[in-house]
Structure formats: C-alpha cells, structure tokens
Image (cartoon, rainbow, N blue to C red; front, side, top):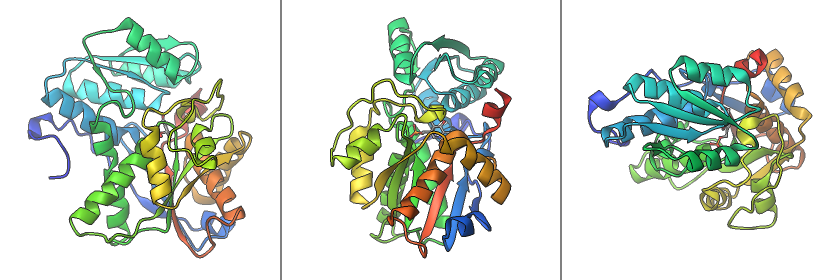
Length: 323
Ligand SMILES: Cc1ncc(COP(=O)(O)O)c(C=O)c1O
C-alpha cells in the first residue's frame, strides 16, 4: 500500500490523477526537442494538480479525526481544499491574497468554504491565518506530510505511462515545491519496490524572474532558500517568497543534477497562447513559466535536443481568463 488512508470510507475521491501524458506533436518541434511530453494536470476534478495532494491530505486527516481545515493559498489549493472538504462534510477556512483572481474565491464559496482575502503574498495570508487561529488542521504547503504523499503519484504515473522508463528531465513550475518534492519521493519509492533503477531524471524548478528565490539559491549553491522580498508575478501560484521546505527542494535539484531557471514575466502570456495554438492545451500562467523555462534551458544548453523531457501543466488557465 503506497498511500496513507486505511479505511475506504475515508477515501474522498473524485477521480483525481491518471491524467494524460501527452506526447506533443508541434510544440516539441517548435522547441527543437525530439520528445516533449506534457503531464496535463488540468484534467483533475478541480482543474489543477493540487487535487492529488489535498485529496490524500484531507482524507487522511479526516480519518485521524480532523473536524475543520484551514489553508493559505494562491487559488488552486484553495479550490481543492474546499472541494475535498465538501466531499467529507468538513468545514474549510481559506486565506487568499486579495489580488487572487475572483473565480477562485467564487469556486471556494460554491463548495461551502469560508474565504478571507488578505493584502500581500501567500506568506501574509498564512500570517493572517495564524493570527486568526482556530480548531482546524493546518494544510499549509509542506507543513503536514500527506499532501506530498498525494503528489508522489505524479512520479508513479509518469513512470508507468512511459513503460517504466523515465524521461531525461522533468520541469516543474515551483512555488512551495510540492510537485518537485513529491516526484522525488515517488521515484525513491519506485526504486525501493524494484520498478525502476537508480537512474533519475534531472529535476528543474521553473520560476518567474519576479519571484525567484529557488533560482537565486541554486545559482549561489545554497542548501537553504532566503526569502524573496516584495515578489511580484502574474503566475500567482509561484509567488512564494520563502518556501517552507526549501532544503528538500534544493536537495532534489542538486541530487538529480538538475537546476533552476527563471523566466521573464512578459513571456507568460505569449507562452500560454503559443501552447494553446500549437498543441491544443489549456495551460495556466504557472505552467507557462515551466514551458518558457524549458525553452531557456534548451537555449543555454542545459537540455539537449535529443533528450526526452516532461513538463507539468499544473493546471488550467480558465479561471485566469474568467477574471
Ligand atoms: C497551477 C499551479 N502551478 C504551480 C504551483 C506551484 O506549486 P508548488 O507550490 O507545489 O510548488 C501552484 C501553486 O499554487 C499552482 O497553483
């Protein structure tokens, strides 16, 4: 058994996961890559990869007796939390930055969550949540173990969908780092049960140049991440000034011989449009950072033309367009 929930009655599933690993036809050629695949997480029940982690976390904490949940979020994790809390019939309290696109607030409210909007970044929303206090389980990124358990299924699926082989590189748009850390853990577990060998893909974190604490840490060879002051990016999910699990993020980047890449803010909108037109995929601004990051990695020679690469489309762009 690889996931933590024991009783089937606490599996609050809506059919998350097993998203397609799309082999691109024209986008790979555009970047000059032989094999570019997109793990399309926009097909999850609430349209983002956050469903994996929050389905498992909410189910497991409910099994352990939680009676309420709270989370600071840039939008997608909030909607996942509201949705899976609704499945379990458990109250959810959501703290989001006030500039989060309105559809995220509306979706949370539709699922019955109590939302609060706060000035500043997700860190300020987390501070507002702590200040308010409540008898809830705190689902903040990497402050409890079970969201990462859900995220590790990304690694299981990528390996299985590639016939138990692995790509040369995986590019993850990175804020708090749940995808990176989860995939890294999942790969270790696959090795432990003998489904893969010791070989690992190079893991790359992609961030907007407007808020790039992971890139700065990588460039200075640091093991920990210094806070990025006054970060600004339209990829709201990547506006994480100080990832709590900085050490784990850096560990995955260094151990895999991967890296971290920053992307100019103006590339986000043009990349979203490029991918829609070339590949028929609806990507969110955060994922656009991943694709633009890949383009930079190819240009700088860190990714080679004949390598197999997977980029995560971490979510749909629809709520951003509605806003
Ligand atoms: C669509 C999307 N992509 C990427 C991220 C960054 O994910 P993580 O914080 O797990 O690194 C987020 C976080 O909010 C997000 O909503």
